Image (cartoon, rainbow, N blue to C red):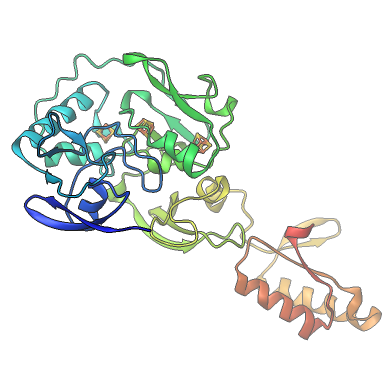
Length: 352
Ligand code: SF4
Ligand code: SF4
Ligand code: SF4
C-alpha cells in the first residue's frame, strides 16, 4: 500500500507516493524539468542527462527521472549549477551530430531543437561531427544516425511498449548506435514496422519515409479521425498539406491506442491519393468495364438484387460487410441485409 510522504522542490513541499521519482513528483506539480529520454510507462534510463537536478547533501547532480523521491529530500530543479550543466550537455549533443535543421524532417517538432533555443545555445561547433553511419532508407522508415542522440527511447518503445524486441544498443563508446537484430537493416531484421520507435524519437533520427520533403510540421494541418482499418478504433491525426494526407500519427491522449498504431494505421495511407484508385463506379458491359454515374450503378444493383430476390428468394443473396468501413456503416449494411433484402446471410470480411 502506498504512503504519503513529502519532498521539497525549489523551496515548496509536495506529497509523493512510495516509488515515485523526483521527476514524476515535479511534473505532477507543474514543475518543468527537461528530458529527452523519458518515456512514460517504461523503465527510466537516465540516458540523456537533461533532467539532472541538485539534491541537498548529494555530491553530484542526479538524474531526476531515475532517482526515487525520499522523505525530507530537498531538490533544486533549476539552480545555476543545474542550468550550466544542461547547457553544456545540449552543446555536446548538438556538436556530436549533424544537426542542420534546415532540411531535417523534425524541424519545428524536435525536442533537442526546442531545448537548444530555450537554453540559448548559440555557439555550436559542428566541425567535429562526422557521418559515422550511412542513412538507412526503407519504404517506411528513414534512420539517420547522424541525428541520433542515443536517448534510447526507441529501444524502450520497441522492447517495453510494443514488446517486439527488435532493436537494442550496439557497439561501445563513440561507436555505439542503435542496432536491429545484429546490426542489420530494419527490413532484414525482426522489425515488424509498427513505427513506435519513430513515434517516440525526440529528434529527426527516425522519420517516416513517405512524408520526407512533403511538408514541415508548421505547414501541415492536423485532422483528428478514427482509423478505418479495423474495429479497434484507434484515434489518429491525419497531417494534411494542400488537401492531401502526407503523414499519419496516433493521438497521444486518446484511448484506445494512446499514440501507438499498427503498421497499416501508421504507414498505409498512400492509397488515398493513388492515381489508380477508383473514383467512379464501373459497370461491366460485354466483358469490359465502362464508367457510370452513381445513379446508374446503384439503380442497376437495386434492380438486379430485386429480380434475384423475386426469382429465387431472399436467402439466395448473401452480403459481406467490411473491416475497412465504420461500425455505423457495418450496422447499416446488416440492417439493409435483414430488413430490406430479408436474409440473415450477412457476414464480415474478418471471417473470410
Ligand atoms: S534532429 Fe532536431 S536539432 Fe537535429 S537537425 Fe533535426 S531538427 Fe535540428
Ligand atoms: S518499427 Fe516497431 S518493431 Fe521495428 S524497430 Fe521500431 S518499434 Fe521495433
Ligand atoms: S533513434 Fe531517436 S529514439 Fe532512438 S536513440 Fe536515437 S534519438 Fe533516441
